[in-house]
Length: 309
Image (cartoon, rainbow, N blue to C red; front, side, top):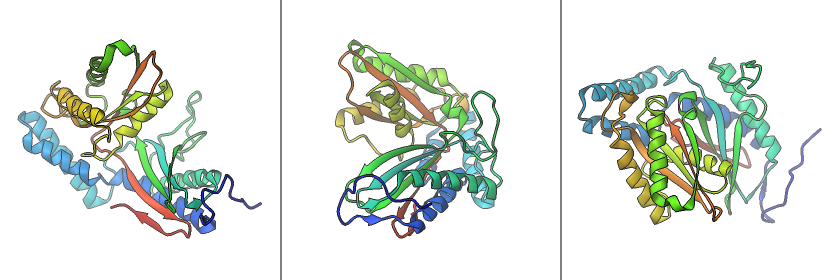
């Protein structure tokens, strides 16, 4: 039985996604999942190089050199940067100029993830939470995790693939602060989280911080912040200033690369926020390891695909 597009048309002249589109989404998911595992984004490479140049501690400088060499070897051999294939997450931005079936998109993402795992003999990092049975596909009930956003007027689907490793994902924190704690309470929550995380998330990290919203929304904001491109800033000037303050404060902790001390504990601190209830202020922290795993592509209605390089 065929599938018909569901949901309201955003515009009368929206392009209708056909079979070629969903096939392309599957192929894009497979390509992006693999790319995120074998390629370190340019902004992360540059941040690591800069950290190496300014590092004053000999052991930490040596570790940063090893990390950079690890990236070179992965480039030369076209192999994984790290053995952890992570839990696959897809962040989607659907243009209102594209009429699609969300269920078919989700199915295509699942198939693409399984295809990459099978064709490239990737370790399967996904299992049942109770029985621990591993289907060996890097997929399962409600996995891949999929998050939707919408882009007014765009005629494509943007796909951001983030395979989230266990070491960094395990270092996730949520604190429901009283409003009276103010900005000082936010700073304290972030620094306490960084200290508790220590070497576990494979620093130097990208620290994602969520502020406000509801408890579940706040954690989602922190994770979204952790995969933002390094060098970008929150559009709210007050929040952007807080990002700079937190980066300096986290790096003053001296945890350093792999937790052995040094000048660079974080390559960046990104904050995403939402308005929240007047009686509380949620703060969440989600770490991303030094690999900065992510890969982005766009798929158009006719199946044309662009992979960001």
